[in-house]
Amino acid sequence: MENLAQLGAGIAIGFGATGAGLGIGIATKGLMDAISRQPEIAGKAVGFFLVGAALAEACALYAFVIAFQLLAK
Image 1 (cartoon, rainbow, N blue to C red):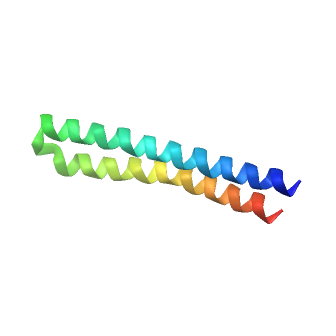
Image 2: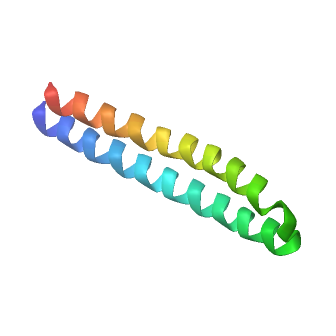
């Protein structure tokens, strides 16, 4: 049973990190596109980007917590 918990922890952290990485990458691409089209909105766009990046990282942290809970069993 412990081996399955370790496998589940690895899968949880793997998917969590992959999802967060893809989300931040897509958000960064959108930020760069927006700033290249309208440089005057750079300050406002970066603020929205940081909120989105924080939400994407929150999902990775949830996966991290779940992985540790699985390893504690």
